[in-house]
Image (cartoon, rainbow, N blue to C red):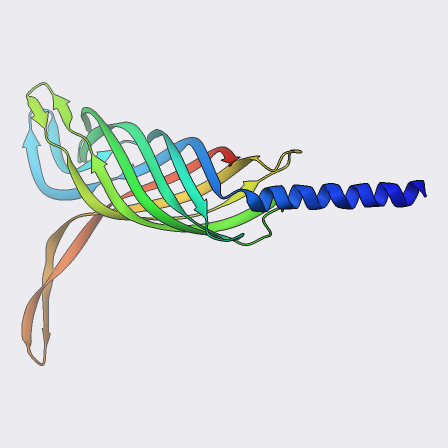
Length: 217
């Protein structure tokens, strides 16, 4: 009798935990990590400080926030914001710091998780579209204007719920954000209908490794 009572209580507890997890429609996340960044190359410029032919945001700490809505147990849509406080660097034959800058990411996303809603570990993939904003840079000779460009973002990672409450968890993620900057002439292509100039697109890339916390509402 005691054994049967314990089994019934355990079943009720597991059912309640699963129902509580399934009833959570919103996920709010905060994360911090490190972003490896690169920029674009251009014409060679000679100055008193050296010879340069590219501009790159420096690798640095980054942080972000995320708001998601669960369409189903496995599908999620939402919005993510990411901020990388960094410095703009001139590179080429020589290297110099131009000044402090900020890089912001704004993306709507779709994410798919591969396990049940009440699983302890939930691997997932994420794709998003939005914009990357490169902030202005203050230098001794004046201010360099920033700009905003269309970008995509792609990630894979894992959500982990090892605690007693399904309302709180952890996240670990690898995310890649390529941002189109410009196109350079890449040569000529000739075919049946004539010859055309081929463009070589250049992208600024951010590769972020981050971890954070998840709150289910």
